[in-house]
Structures are given as structure tokens and as C-alpha cells.
Length: 537
Image 1 (cartoon, one colour):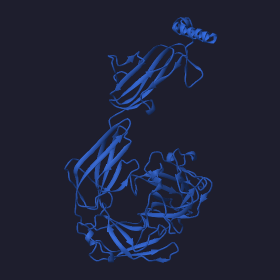
Image 2 (cartoon, helix red, strand yellow):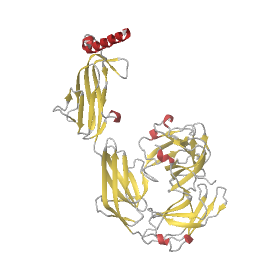
Image 3 (cartoon, one colour):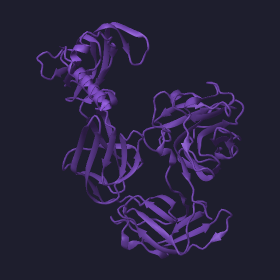
Image 4 (tube, one colour):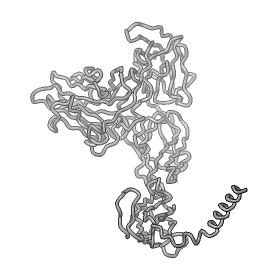
């Protein structure tokens, strides 16, 4: 009984204490922390919104005696207030109707010295803070389109309108250009119905080949998920492709997925394809002849200008040499009635994905701007690396694809070695992912002007792979340019390299071995590719 009595007394004491807690704490003077804490509803998105959107600003600081938010005049509409310039509310929601970058200030008066969460030192009792808000305009693009002539030069401008039915000859190309863009769209998507031949790195220039007669619609979508915005440009019957009297050109022969594909300049009549008109010569890397009878030749869908050749019981590997011939007479014909000419022993190139496309590597030389910020001289292989030795610029004088190429000029006896970089220094050299031990084809397109003078010497352009620890295969040249080299045309050169690393950087080297009073040598480069090879077991 005694124990139970003591327990009852304790419970009553606690209950009385709770009931009189206001009296207990009323006279306590606890110090309050003065802390500056400001938040916004878009703080995780750099306070960036689309015009017409809103941001809520919140002052959740402690120890604030007074506060004043200040907005630029004529920029914002403060919800629930006739005053759109200042507010003393703790939370302020403002709509922004004018694009631009604006400073929103908050002046706070604290009970005493305040502290910021980012520093142990006091920041004072009267504190002014600035929040930078970016208001993007609505997404808007200005679009132009031009027909390209047979030689690739720019022709007549197209009429961009519904039902315009701009006439394009089958097999010819159209260049679509986003001339200007507002609202910083993160995504640009084209839908043309034709075959995309070239797409610039920034996706603002698109070359499309129309291989088949008929009418074609067009759509351009430019959008951003956040801050949300979208512009959709649609034209119906924008282009009418008419029959052509141009010859059918064989544009490309590729080894792809164990087969061989032939890419023609326009649609092929399916009924005109005859296996007996084609032949393949196939050899392995040791030049041993392989069985190469053709099983089928199939026209692709929807790319009806592409034929796929399958061999009887034979897979075509990337290290095989494949030569394709067509000897039909008035046999293979386009859908608009033009017969293909014969061709003999056309080599098949390696298809596959260019791994540089998944990086920020400037493989197509489209970044432009200040060259020294995009490429640096690699001093290990460059000697002497001086301005008098070599110079390099972005140019549109000669372009393999896109809007620009790389023009490299090397003086007599000079050497240039270049690495793609993000900052002009070795700390920004761009690496790309690889499969350690994998074999890759490294290639580049080059253009040699006939104005160069070689004499009896040569110019070598070498391709290096640098893994950070060693340089792989440094003595294999991508191209040797001599007086006998093809002039005034784009030529593709490549090497095969097995790389014992999971990443690497690419070094391109050009050496002018010519001595004496002979003019400097100029080479244009474009469209670097690195592709993993599927090798014959």
C-alpha cells in the first residue's frame, strides 16, 4: 500500500505541472537564433521559368523583426496585392510576364547579429539578399529551307507553307535550317519523310534526301520539359518529289550486321532486282578467298533506296575485304525509270555506330567559335609547336557534312598534333569510352586542295590513341598525301587499332616533310569516326 501511495502522489505532481506549464515558462527568457534562410519554389532549377510562369519566394529565417521584398518595376505581378514592386509578406508568389534576367532583393532586419547556414561568422543584423530569376521567352524558331543542287551547292529557297508542293527532283536533297531560335529549347526533333543525310551537332541544320516520288509533309518540334515550353511547326504537302532523269548514283557500300548494303541515290524498283546481276569477292584479313555466292538481295523498308545482300551460309565481318560488282544491262532501274550503270569491285566500308556521337567530342567540327578553346596542340608529338609552324581554323570553304570543317595548314618541315578539348588545356581533353581489348576502326575524311605543292616529298597525317599511360600504335598513318594523291575531293582513310584500355583520347597529327622554299600544305578534315569492329573468329 505504501508503494502505491507514493506512485499516486507522483502522478498528481506531474498532472499539476502540466496544467500549470504556462506559469512555469512565462518568465523564462530563452535566446533565439537569428538565422537567414530563404527558399524559392524553383531553387532546384536555377530559378528559371517560362514567361507567364510563377515563383513563390519564402523567408523562413528566424529572428526577423521586419522584411521587404523588392521586384523590378513592370516585371512581376504579385498575387493578392495591388503593389507589384514591394511586399512585406513572409511568402510572396509572383508571376513574371516579361522575358529577361532579374534581381529580386530581400532586406531583413534581425533582433541581433544573424548567421547564414553556409558560414560560422555573423552577417550582421541588417541583411540584404539577392535572388536572380531568369524568365525565358516562349519557344520560337525561324525556319528556312533550300533545295540543294546536284553538286551539293545551295539552290533556290523553298516556300514554307501548307500545300506549297515545292518540286524536288527524286534523289536530290533539301537543307532545312533553323536560322534563329528563342526560348532555349532543350530538344529539337525533325520529321521530314525523307532520308537524313547530315544533321549538325546542334541539330539546327538538316540535309534530307528524297528518294521516292510523291508528296511529303514536314514537322519540327522544339521543346523543353522544364521550364515547360513547346513549339510545333507543321506543313502538309510541303514538298512534291518528281521523277528524275539524273543517273542513279551508288552512294555507299557497307558491311552491316553480317551482310552488305548498297545505298543508291533514290528508290529502286523492287521488280528490277536480279541476284544474277550482282557478284561479291570476299577475302579475310589474311587475304584468303572466302565463299561468297549471293542468296538474296532485298530492298529495305522504309528506305527503299537501300538494297541488302545476304550470302549463302556466310557472315561478312568487319575485318573482311568485300568487293561488290553489278553487271546488269538495262536491268536495275529506279522507280522513276532510270537504269543504273554498271560498277566493278566497289569496296564495302565498315558500318556501325560512331562512339564519338555519345560524347561531347567535336567529331564533325561544328562547334566553331574560338578554335583554341576547342582544340589544343599536343606537345608530345608536335615539334616545334609554334604559331609559325602551323595554324588551324574552323571553315566552310570545304565541308564534307554539316556547316563547317577543320582547316589545318602546316609549314615546311613543321608538325602539328591536335587534341579535342573543352578548355584549351590538357585538363579538358575529351576521352571516350571503349571496351578494353576491343578492336576499333578510326577514320577521318580529308580534302586535299590541288593548290598544294608537294615536290617529291609527302605529308603524313597520323592518328594516335592516348590512354593516359601510353600511345597505342603511334606509327600507323591514316593518310599519306603525295603529289599523286586525289585532289579536290573528300577521301576517307582509316586504321584499325586494338586498345587495352576502357577510355582514351584521340590525337591527330599532320607532318609536312617538305624542306626548302615550297608553299605550306593545307588539309581539310571532317567527320571523325571511331567504330568497334566485329572481327572474324
